[in-house]
Image (cartoon, rainbow, N blue to C red; front, side):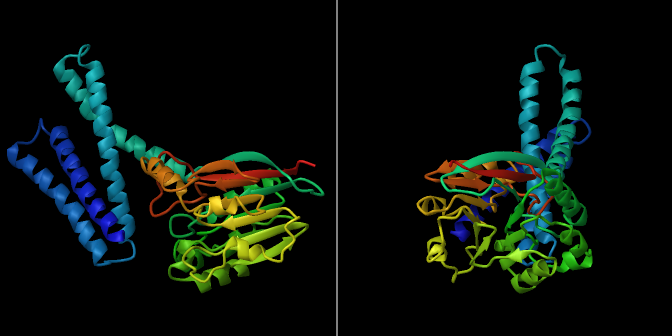
Length: 362
């Protein structure tokens, strides 16, 4: 499966690189000749395939980010080419050829720059989304939870964003904070180097702050990540159930934990007459969980695709790739995440925090 995906990705990269080369040839056409056009195409392919070789040879821990950024550049150039062509069709009857050509050559790079700026804005400017759900269980009082997944704390996302998250949770006056996975970006190296612990310690709530480990917390450094989270005052639930003020809180480790029990197994012997909240990093078991006495599930992982058109693709892979849906007696949430993966760009998605008010029907 991975081999097929890699092969398809390589083919798409070659196609997009051809698009980049042709776009550059058009952009610089007034100033270069045939040889120059060949050089532009050759340089485009050299960069793409050189980066691919570097990725395969694992030449530095930053290589993935560089390749990811280059892929986004290729994608944005394709978007710019499409937008430029549409603009050409709309304006060709109203403008002379030379002024139109000059205008379009100015528009295309500005469009790419605009996409990059907008993408960075979406990555670093979180929105707060509110949802009220009613459950068929008795509650002493309504419960307000704040949800932020996929922080990916690292060299590009750290102390300032943690302080912003703390401000949001305080402003929203949440009772409990849930962080369903991918808190670190593979390791704690940047977290420790940038001294993020004091900032994470500020994140508090009356009923506590709880987390589970996602796939990026599991890849390389899970023990140290768990230790650092707990040292900052978070309660990490690794396939555990905890009763908190009359609420049953369940936390599952990521799918990479091959020994993890199912949600059904975790609930065996528990008092499921209480409201049941589940943190499950990946939204892969929603339909099975809808048949269990789970009232609210919060997940992340998918990032809502992060950069379009991936937001459309992930919808074909998951029952709930993004947003909220009531299924059976349960309420399910998949957030696009508070941070980002790889590069600080989002298009078709935005950094976000969910604030969920849970109330009883009784």
